[in-house]
Image (cartoon, rainbow, N blue to C red; front, side, top):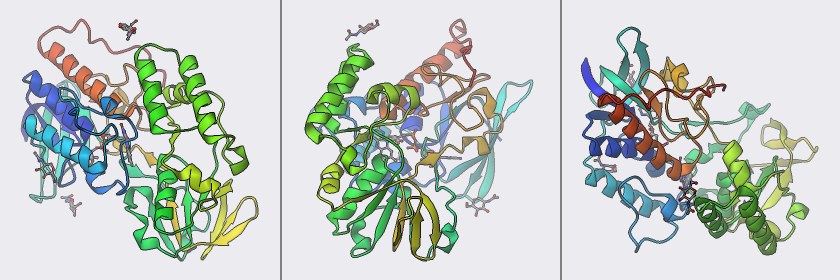
Length: 394
Ligand SMILES: Cc1cc2nc3c(=O)[nH]c(=O)nc-3n(C[C@H](O)[C@H](O)[C@H](O)COP(=O)(O)OP(=O)(O)OC[C@H]3O[C@@H](n4cnc5c(N)ncnc54)[C@H](O)[C@@H]3O)c2cc1C
Ligand SMILES: *[C@@H]1O[C@H](CO)[C@@H](O)[C@H](O)[C@H]1NC(C)=O
Ligand SMILES: *[C@@H]1O[C@H](CO)[C@@H](O)[C@H](O)[C@H]1NC(C)=O
Ligand SMILES: *[C@@H]1O[C@H](CO)[C@@H](O)[C@H](O)[C@H]1NC(C)=O
């Protein structure tokens, strides 16, 4: 059993950023990572084509901005290069192969007991820490909805998390389920490989592009209201894309930045899919799957079609509650922060969460700084500012 001041769970951008901030304050800590590398989501579970959707000024981690020579929108390789530089600069040494299987508060002792399965050394380890930081990400568990008959499907089923490129699907009939950023971008990627996929669209969404998102975020950063920003970007999007309802794409009520702030749901950042929908190389199917029979997918509008592959771009679930037994001090039953933004990162009894505010890398950096400052203040006896937020109605 080892005693440490802070245990950080996860060596993605959130865990690495929190580590860098703690180092700046000379606070000792360890980072536990279940995979064999840092930033595993980006190295192992992101499709080849992915570029950051947010401009580089909104995607840097604390104490290290992207160089002026970096492109405005970074590729996966460029972002991983940045991460490698970051890890090296702050001399962060995550313990790889260390999956946290349980974390409990030792009542009376005000300590967190963290149990780890170290698969590299093939042994169990126990750590005790005054502070525990949950940095296991919003994308830890791939979610596939329970569709009747899914087990009978004779083709291939893949979640967007494991989709790399369309190269292996040439001349296949592919159905993409889900119309968030992953689903829309995967549909585009498939057309680049000569596949004409169908995309199932169920909910309304806004369509913007990277430049409009960048413009909106800059305006918000200089204190424009959601109303002003949304009105401007929507009118520019309308000029660019025209009326999309004829293609089965309907906008939700409420503007894109307002809804992002309120619900965390992002607008679709178009990478060229809209043009492919307009020219017919991506086919829109509206509604839901009613059932699957062998190769056949039956939709609720009674249409049916045979597919070889179904790509589920149906998002993720937070599963931190499975190992964080005393999650109630920071998360709700669904595994998301129980406190409202901007105090979501701070739990009680030395428990924190980083990177769960649905605000991308921008939110990650803010959380890491706030957590390190808070721990620093507590360790230095200045607890005046550390009373937990009262708004834990969730
Ligand atoms: C395809 C895709 C595109 C994206 N594009 C953007 C973008 O353009 N801009 C942006 O800002 N954000 C983007 N994101 C959001 C992305 O979530 C963040 O960029 C960032 O990766 C979040 O970092 P994180 O450290 O919070 O989570 P992750 O990167 O998910 O890291 C969490 C880490 O915790 C580890 N872990 C989980 N459970 C355990 C456990 N029990 N024990 C030990 N370790 C554990 C995981 O292995 C993982 O390495 C994108 C996400 C995806 C999937
Ligand atoms: C981060 O991960 C990359 C890829 O596995 C590796 O090359 C690098 O050494 C890692 N950095 C540290 C400090 O572990
Ligand atoms: C640890 O994890 C590995 C890989 O997931 C698994 O095979 C092994 O059974 C686990 N060991 C223990 C002691 O739980
Ligand atoms: C926005 O408002 C905040 C708080 O009112 C202020 O501190 C900040 O300087 C403003 N930023 C700009 C760019 O006007």
